[in-house]
Length: 307
Ligand SMILES: Nc1nc2c(ncn2[C@@H]2O[C@H](COP(=O)(O)OP(=O)(O)OP(=O)(O)O)[C@@H](O)[C@H]2O)c(=O)[nH]1
Ligand SMILES: [Mg+2]
Image 1: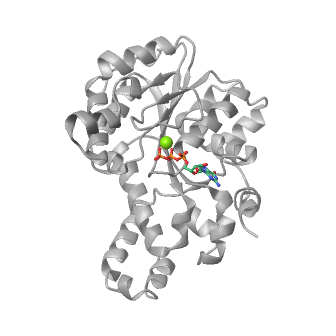
Image 2: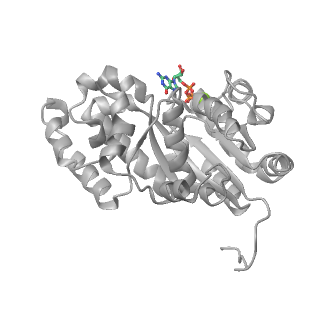
């Protein structure tokens, strides 16, 4: 049941959170590390919380680390589970220890920080089927964290029509299950130059998820895929009917790219209404309504990544 929140109530120091999710290797940990430095430079009271119990190589210093509660390695050893089962167990364990571990620790940290980057595990089932991570996110939302899920997906998935259709389905499924403000990101956009010869369409076809019938036609070139024509058609129709999925491009090592993604994320989690970073009303408004001519958007978003 929804908690009643009086219309005249004010939140003293609102807290914001990015839940950084996405398939294995899509760049979540790298993004958290770079975003930490980048947001700090913008003057935000930002920190990273590691929620990935198998995160061995963090390029940042987390203020809170789930590996102090439980690790995949320990689960595998003591419960004789495989790596995937162990990760599921860890997620359930975290969900069971929200009240006595995660929330009190975050509460303490809230004295020093109001912007949290949550580096989440990479097993995709945790966001498309399993309940535990959704429970964690719901609980944080009830604690009035202004959350946004940032779903990183390797832009390599644009290189084959079948892979891109699977990506669309996964992104839609995650958006519907998490029911939070959501930004889908094609990560490693700098590598698009490499895949570009393999792309059947311009990059904006993929980012804006334009008419998918052209993508379906490309599937006919592949005899295996032709067998699944009706299934792919049904998936594409569903994605188009919901009209929810689109993508932002990200090259995590480019300040310009990080800035553009920040603008989208600030709109999604409402940070724009608080930020002291925007110095003028005009820049705030431009960010809020996304008032940007298509030609300029093309120039800024797409051209850096294609010849
Ligand atoms: N070229 C390029 N490489 C990137 C970018 N972002 C991440 N990578 C690389 O992608 C690889 C995987 O990055 P991680 O940050 O470990 O990915 P992850 O999603 O945290 O992986 P898991 O936690 O194992 O699921 C690393 O070698 C990164 O250097 C990017 O924007 N461009
Ligand atoms: Mg990681």
